[in-house]
Amino acid sequence: MGQLILSEGMTPERIIASTAERAQTTARLVGEACGCAGEPLLTSRLYLAGPDEYLNLLSELDDGTGSAMVVGHNPGMEALVEELTGAAEQMPTAALARIALDLEHWSEIVGPRRGRLLGLWRPKELP
View 1 (spheres, rainbow, N blue to C red):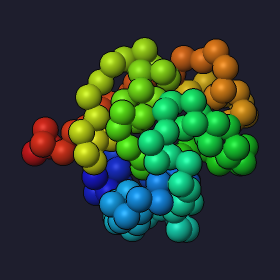
View 2: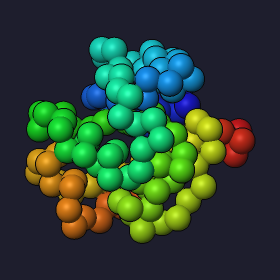
View 3: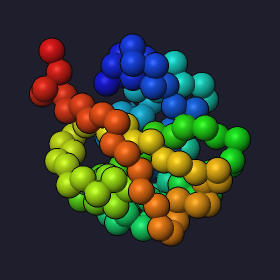
View 4: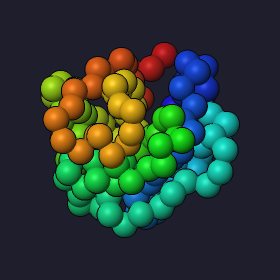
């Protein structure tokens, strides 16, 4: 997935990951492969979290951060994609959803919003 992110020009400015061991490992490996600067921000808030907690965490990002990737857990990730885009998508382990949000400030992510699902990649569907 890190190579896909790099080749598609989707390297995030910030990676936020659950403190669960597998999520931390995934975040670090993907970050290294796609050239994301800095260590992932690790937080226990994503473990067993629903979409509201994901949104609250994203709302705390500095407005200078133009893009972010979240490495979390299901069913929270699937619920987050649906909350942001209206699309109910299956997100198996290591799946990647690219969502465009029309925000001036990250704090606007909490409240009425609608993003666009620009792409969805599942590992078993990749060539």
